[in-house]
Length: 270
Image 1: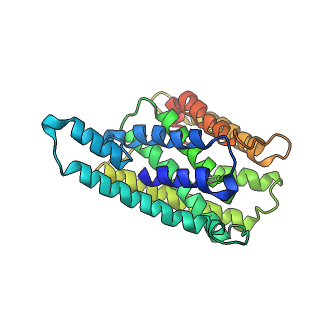
Image 2: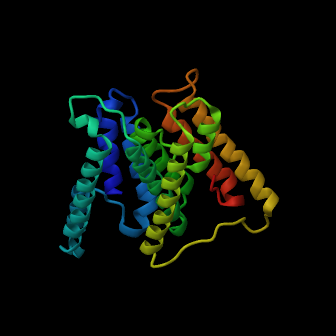
């Protein structure tokens, strides 16, 4: 999550393509919300060497000098990785010529966003987080703001299909859509392996909650996937209703709504 924090900062507050904007603070704060509830139960959710050292020193009676240096090292590695990936994803920021993202960069963008989304889902569920819907929505919102200008930030095969079928994105060819879906599914697999590793092999099943059947699950998943896809098309694709600053918040809010309303029935995969 230190990687995610630094990566989002670089994309929303530094990248030329996203300047100026009014969402940088919201996007950066969203990472903290996502990580605090997702990873907080595991490591405390510092994501900052200054925070780690401050917490270590403030608890002086139990000061253990091995923890803050270890935390700081991991956080610095995350920051360095973020800088490296940023240079690859935003290569046009380091050249005089304006360059459009290549398909490989778009596929990486979809992988990164989907990975952080699914990782946040898994960590929240395994931690039995009291604010899972908000944490997951925040991770989606932050990565949309960070990577929306690279790949469109679908992070979901259903959204990619909706964009393709809408006919409102002429650059979304069948070949590119297939590449997006492969990247998203691969990211989901790696993210599930990550949260399972963090929790020593634990995982959780997908399926209806107790007392609900296939019909209830089908209705919930169809309706809230429809809501999510429709909002994406409306605020990020349509030339009439798109929003240059609120798009990430609107899309993330769909996950909050669906997670809280439909999650207790189907699990809220959408």
